[in-house]
Image (cartoon, rainbow, N blue to C red; front, side, top):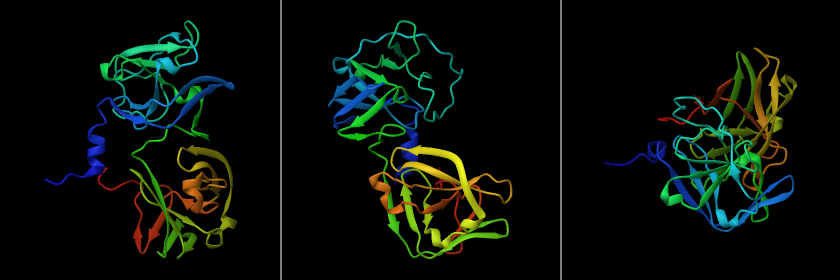
Length: 261
């Protein structure tokens, strides 16, 4: 029977998973080196959607000691989004930079990962080769494609048309719905205003958001003023939340999630 790869990726979510990382990987804290390795692993604890870096203990440049144990929900959520590093779904030892300090590392008990220490991405600054890593570790099974398109895209909020274009750039990202980035000339910028909201994507960079005064005034669009190289084709183009307004492509409404997931 044929296998749906979108679904099979989620069927392994309850498992402890790992993949080799052959890049030179360095971690810093307040400018001081913490780890330097070419033998890292990417580790997903059960339920984790994104990985953390695990480095050989011999490649650590600091001494780790037992950490204080933070409270975690019981039971844990079935799906663990980025953050809450100290919520663990597998057995192991919690580690800190100072005795009784907050947890910044975790040594799994699993024998396959023996000698590896998983480091909290958010506690350090990271560099792969000579490029800074933003947001979270890069997942080798995740990618983005930015494709010029001639599809007809219309964006509405209630009865108001916010944008209409036949020259979008479609951005396809693994396990996420397609997003449609539109030239500013095709957007009603007079109906939008700059938001104080910013988010970080490991593959696209730092996003700036736009609010609308229509129907509640929440952030409904975003753009990347200085994208990472994979997202360069969408620089300064505007994308609208299909979850917060109506996005129609060639006459068909766009869903806010991948079908079948």
